[in-house]
Image (cartoon, rainbow, N blue to C red; front, side, top):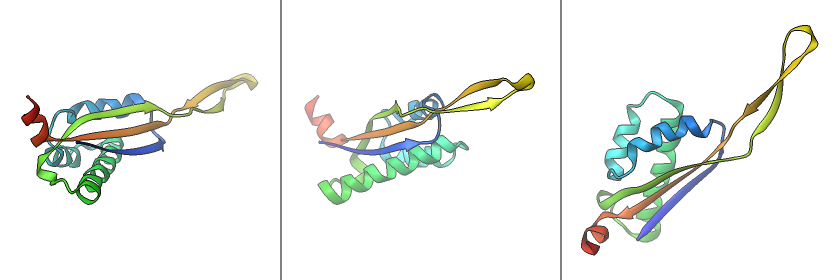
Length: 117
C-alpha cells in the first residue's frame, strides 16, 4: 500500500529542495525524519514537515504502523514562477525569477514490499 502527502507552492527553488530529497529516498520513514532533523537547511525543514504529514496519513487513514514505512519517492516538482525586476545602474532593470516548488512524499508499507519479492 502507498500513502502520500503533498505540499504545494513552497517558496524555495526546486533545485535546492532536490539536493535534500535525494538523501531520504529508499530509507525508512523514521530514519528519514531523524536525518532531516540534523540537516541545517530550510529545504530539510520543509521536507520534514511533509514527511511527518505522510506518516500521519498512513497511521490515521490507513492504520499502518510507522515502523514499517519506507520512503518510496520524494518528488520535487516545479511550481509557478513569480517574475520580478531588479533595478540596476543607468535606469535598467534585470529580470528575477522567484521559483516555487511542490513537494510530494510517497511512502510504501515495507512489510508488503518484502512479501512481494
